[in-house]
Image (tube, rainbow, N blue to C red; front, side):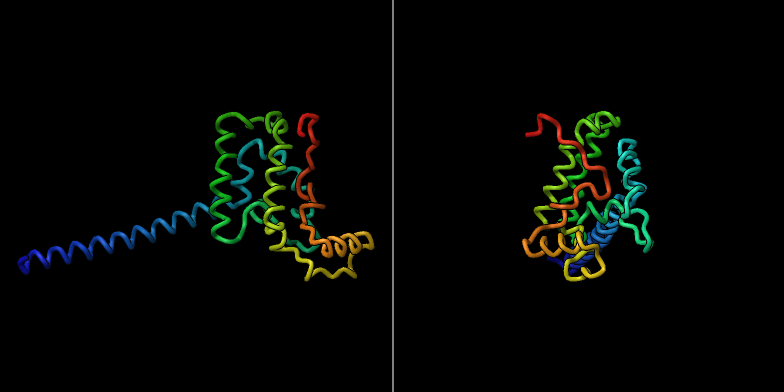
Length: 184
């Protein structure tokens, strides 16, 4: 191979590497932008079928409380770690699909599937030991002496039994759906 051909091949290789590097940066930025955008309260409540959930959420302590700390949709529904977060985002795309396809595009259709949808979330939380809850709440950080006697007793027993948050706290930020007669 001539010097000129070798030099051209080297330049091409460097150019290709440079383009791949820039492409990688753009890809990572795009994924990060997409995740951040879809984690916003505005995005989560942009589908009109989510307005019912949003109104329920606004009645909860996760929305308005004495400390002024607000847990938004992503805090409870999206893991913090990248791997589980990406899996959750991919799985959540089905909600957008069902909204667009008309499966849950009205409050009535959403309510008809609400028990099923809630159970998917509850099962995911149980399987992860309520990972999203525990990003804010942790037995080790609870001052049980500051809780009501009932809460203190229940939290202490739950910790002893190895229970996870969602086992007792279904319907915290949203109304707990009624189990349909044919849900078994």
